[in-house]
Amino acid sequence: MVRQGRSSSSKKHTPQSISISISPDEVLDTVDTGDETQLRFRYQHAYGVILLIAALSGNKPYTVLWCEHHEDLLGQRNDGFFDAYQIKTRRNGLWNLLDDPLKDSIKRFVEVDQRFPGKIKEFFFVSNASYENSDAQNKAGRSPKKFLQAVMHASSPSDLTPPFNTVFEGLRLHCRCEPLSLMTVLKKLDFLEGPDLDSFEAVIAHKHLPEILECRALSATALAQLLDELIAKVYKASCLSVSDPARHWYGLNKGDRDNPKLQAKRIATESILLFIRENQFHLLNVTKDAPVLSGHLKETLDLYLTQSFGDDRVAKLDQAGETDPERTTLLHQVFVDLELKPRSDQPRPPRRLERSQLALFTESEQISEANPPGGEKSLSAMDCFLKEVSSKIVIIGGPGQGKSTLGQYLAQVHRSILLKREKELYRDTAGGLVVHSLNA
Image: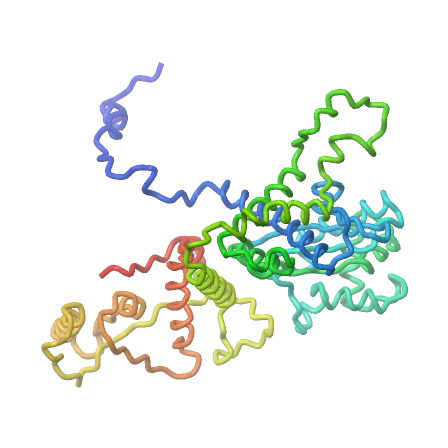
């Protein structure tokens, strides 16, 4: 038995002295990643809806979509063949052929092609993220686009030249297959970029669903409701949810073709069109009297903000000498808050200035009095902009000194607040949090 001293007793009662001032319903949990995982699964199911819509609008030759059946998604074509899809999501960075998840997907494609020879017509790797396509000597070989172009021009693996032959051999070792088997799959492979991870539902509702004639007159709210129901159908087909009571009397020796568990993974494209038509009257009357324009406007603004937020994740360092055309440097990795110093010859502010602006001038005067020339205390540029301590701030600096990056980051802060995505932005290179408040 361990004898507790006075210090141990003190530690035991420490929690009782902590004042509880917050409640779980007031604090966003940024530690548990369960919600992020669910979002990524929902993205996969939503992409299944994209394929169903593409089939109904005549852009894909699919009569049936199979969900979580040999692949994430399997499109059964009207010519008797199948297209296989692997869906992968990521928050940051561009995909290249050194990424293990991408190599794992190719390995999976090889295994499916070997199990069902001659049945898979095309393989698709889909992601919300983009792909490397650099001309830099040390990156060209791992570029998915350039690698596939080299494969298409080669009649056999031995025709591949450096650096593509080295990447091919690395993939072959990862897939544990014969060179010809890998070559066969690569010639049927393509890489697709799906919608953004945080805006895919709005994109599908307002860009894809209207491709179906029966959806063009629906309001924004009705489109969102319909999409939610379609995603639920793909989700149900993707899991082991079988509602057919025949599963209780279907014999094990009857084979799998008519097995209720197999058929539950099947979504006929015509059944989706029938579902939309059966519910069209109801959908047309959803929020009939609501101001549709404001809904469309909000969706448009959200789409624009989300697109801009995604584009500006990457720093634009042309004037700083960046030569990589792929722009792979993340903004939060290079952003450094600038220092502002009030001009020594600035006049006293007029009386009509707001109190917050007057405080800035007062602070600058106190700084000047307390610090000798050359040792002035600097003000945070981000704080000055976000707290709007002055109606006019001029940033002076030469090329590459951070003026544009400051404006880019400032815009990202406002976008993140409007999109409620602050936690994605306030991360420095050490993994901590860089917090800027809009409150004075």
